[in-house]
Image (tube, rainbow, N blue to C red; front, side, top):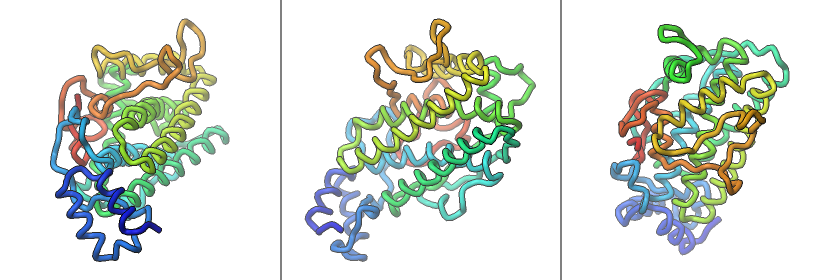
Length: 309
């Protein structure tokens, strides 16, 4: 439990502006600031719109809401793959426009180990959604509209895995599932790395570091299994397609480099790549240009950080 003074200090560091702080304090005082716990530290007002490159003075709640949008996508993908259904309804409401999920079905796994890997990742992503929603409280954004049917086909065509007019279903079999997971697993890791310097509250930063580590484990798991099953060429093509969505950058690596396995994509200093929120949106919106929506998010993500770079 936190005392009033400590809570106010955390709010001052983690909310975006004086109006946001006043709104939070007004909401929190109704429940009694002396009884506020760590899971209720949030700003109650939705921040004013801002472009994705305005990252110099954004609040921790804005960063966490951006991450929540990404967690919704991952959680829905893995939940459908393992169980045949998405997130429970009570984890999808919030500020902004709540949207449906298009596509998704249970994968007919043949490998016991791959199914277990998928089930653990699905559980982790479900917990990540719950965590962010708990921390953000009434400021948590709703699940935006998500398309996990047509978007994978767009990526597969761009990567040359299929021809125009064909479709790619990541839920059709476990090999397709691994390729579908590869499309955004690395993106999640680079998104948290890029967001870390923008977080001012050390408690929140510690939590973000913990989630980044889990996402890195997920990405390495998918990359390892995909490599062992002969998927390096397809993964390299997907990596090249992702790189093309952020022209002029080199923030991606395939499963092989110079013919050798490359399970851990990192820069020459051994550090994981970092993407800005705008660069992440370029990938999930499937566009190399500034845009408010597209790809996996046909109506865009919810919150202030919603324009691609």
